[in-house]
Image 1 (cartoon, rainbow, N blue to C red):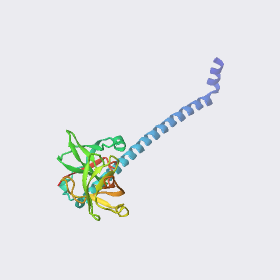
Image 2 (image 1 turned 60 degrees about the vertical axis):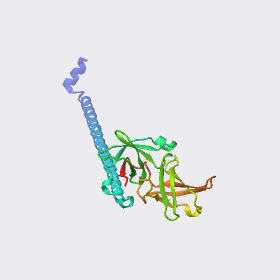
Image 3 (image 1 turned 135 degrees about the vertical axis):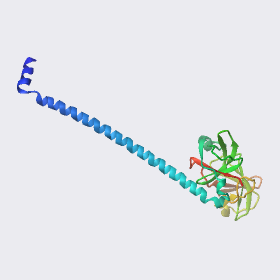
Length: 239
């Protein structure tokens, strides 16, 4: 041990080893710094990406607002009859896909509605069903307990279409003789009866046509609007 100490003091025999240790330490420190900087950079990039995603989402919702405003003439509503967007706070999508109860709960804002209908950026989705303490319960057009007065302009078919319990599907029954080839693809609109929905709001198009046992014709109508598209909805005061 004394010999090694003497050699190191006299001839600096272990300087290369010490230099290797120093270089290794510096390399490790530099690597750690680079890793830390990379992590910080990654975190910043992730934050920037999330910010861009939020901005895109906000822009999409703004475009949805413009879309709703653009449909004012179609909905026959005044601008002041439209609410600020209501955020969806509860939508049981499992229930929506599997079962017949199709309900959505949205938060309240400054406006109060006794009755009215609900739309999102894709169109008419339902109406106000119940007024709760902190939310409105909406019943969707496809709910099996919902009915909406609709009509077809070309064939002059009027009916109270009932929700089928299946996603985006309502059923219209009519005793009027219809040609299957002609009715498929025809569009139905709100008739304005019932005191909730304004007249001539687009509802959906015919996708199937059958004759039931009571000799009525059963018309299956696919709803234009998709309630799953947006996280917010707009409520319109009924005229």
